[in-house]
Image (cartoon, rainbow, N blue to C red; front, side, top):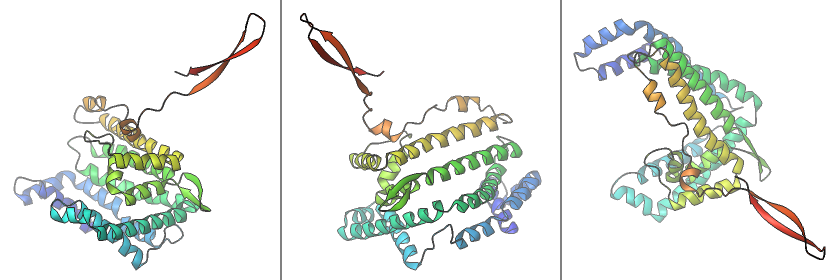
Length: 316
């Protein structure tokens, strides 16, 4: 593992070099040797962690051959449908392929539900996943920061990125296992809404996740799908929306932490970031009307007869 990762790092450096690869590799290793070895050490336990995840049947649902085939089929058809040209058009328009994908989607959604039941329904799984996140996060932070020394020192970068990864992964896990209630007598968790949206209509899923981009769009089919999901699962749709803003805020904090020791001026970059990320609701749905409440005004006519006048007040 150590030698394989070291060779991978070396190959990445060589791929970006414009001078002699050997000279570039030797020069880069001479300058970054300690960081490379620290990264190798941080990542040495990742394979064992991944094997542990796969073997932990108390927290992760086992997938048989049929389950894996269905998942592969869904990804294969989705990939074909996004290929330009006649193949992609055929995959989109073919009734037979649509039926096959519909079947694969329903099976994949059922597997996601089973997985959520297994993981979120066991309190010990959250404790175990914290250790896994720590190992994976530290490894990824080391890998990324090894190549960012021209911008920020390795140590400062690693601390800031690891903090971002741990905070974001922890928030993601909590939102995934946020309980919605029971559906058909079984508990339902918010992470299942993401799986449902993705497997049912991948294009709409991407559209909903891209609301903050300059290419954001509001397809009527996707807007309808989101509105339907909100009505069925209002709490979960709110959790998903808030998670998008939280991840963005975590990125800002990471950049602010890096900026303290950065070798370039990052203030303009950070100051130029928006304070708020537009949500799919804000982009595509009409604004929610302000709440109203009724006021009763008591009036009396000349003869002293009581009259009641109802006034609707708008809260602003």
